[in-house]
Image (cartoon, rainbow, N blue to C red; front, side, top):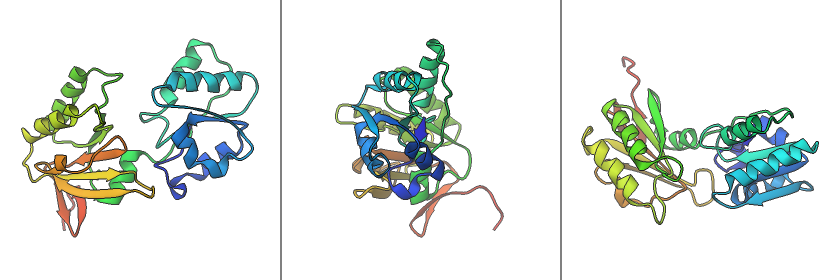
Length: 238
């Protein structure tokens, strides 16, 4: 399981590149495979679309069981909303005997934070707003707990064409615990040609373009903006 980072080749680790180059078969979501086309020449490619994670894992395990060296790729880190957990669960359930290695990558939250400044300097949480696999009631409970705990939060999968209300409800929850001037950063398509970085606040960020390729970071009581940067103070005496 290989994490390829946010998308730009310069954000891939050497270990991830070596694993892909050394593989016979590369399996992944077709848009992520496009991002590593420079590493996959001459290799067998197994691609599929959104919501076909089980099929991708099964294909990777099948090829590995046949003796092939397989790279199952995820954007960001494979163990953070990626393919590692599912692949390991399936391998355990099928008593899979081949060696499995999880190769980390730069997460979307870390990539977004770096472009915004330093919003994750202190304790923070990551929450996905996608309710395809987790009920919205559960997600909402987590949002309320994080908001009340004054944690910075990085929101994955914040909004899609059909899924609008979740981000609006998340904003309402945080506004009950934090002032409207709380910094909010939006990083979209980090490391790609159409990258967009926006610094807003809790009262206004919903007016900005936000989609499935966006990461939304909401600050806490120690967060502020300075010289165009989003900073969460760690408490050093200056």
